[in-house]
Image (tube, rainbow, N blue to C red):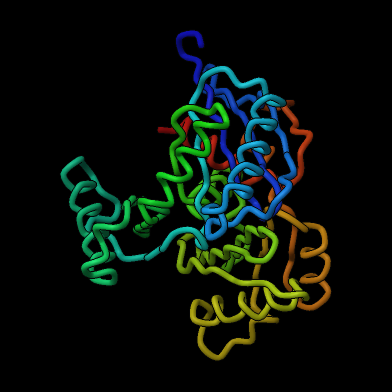
Amino acid sequence: MGAGRAMATGIQLAERAVHAVCLIRERGALRLAGTVSQRAEQRIDPASLGNERNRSALIAALAEARRRLGLAGGTVSVGLSSGGCLLRMAPLIFSPPRNRRQRRANAEHLRWEMAQALGDQMAQFACETAMVGQQGLVAVARRELLDLYARIFARAGFGKARFDVEAVALYNAAEACGLLVGAPLIVLVSSRGAAADVLVIRDGVLQQVGHCPMDAQPAQSLQACMREQCQSVADGGERLDQYPLRLWVAGERVSELCDALGQQTAWSAAPVPWHRLLAEGDEPAGSAQLAVAAGLAAGRLEQ
């Protein structure tokens, strides 16, 4: 990798597939190096990875994705959904922080907030903090799960993988793509089969991050969950159906969810146009199911 040129690959583990996007930053612009969606033979579920058969299926899918991408170097960022980690939002002491001391104070405060919730169990978790817009977000994941993922990715040939929160990656990608304007209430959805992450933004400020299980009627269950998430954010007494709301959907079954939600509500729903992250003329071949992976890769190249 030449001077002034950096590469990162974002990987999202969906319910039955590995989604990966490889980006290169060169002369201040992001270029697309490759994308792949590789189906896994077994369901990808952290709770089932103690089984050797499920681990082997994930390792095989990751190794094939790596082969198809032709990876040689660069940083690898693996997404953690809100189903695989605990998320907590809290106001920042300094917003925005003006120096390193204030950033450190914000991070310590966010870790303290999570420690109040976890108590004596805090030592069992790895903790990361982030500033998302004007809000603070702290995420924790069990160390044993991260260690297991690290071994799986090493066996698949990825070397040392880094872990990032998918909700933060999606928010940052949406902000960079100019999606957080145009309506008082913006909702970002990342669908991953049987569940979805839902982010609610009001007037450009992240207000809620939720985890929504989806049943045999995904659009209806997602709509109900979104209503619950949005109601506390919208003005009191207003009907959400009439509230100016824009919905951006990433992940799996995007077209199905956009069509169904558009028919059931007055909300405007569309796939996340993550190609706006890229240099002009660098159009991706993939769909909105790759948006989170793209956000993970772009986030690493910003650090």
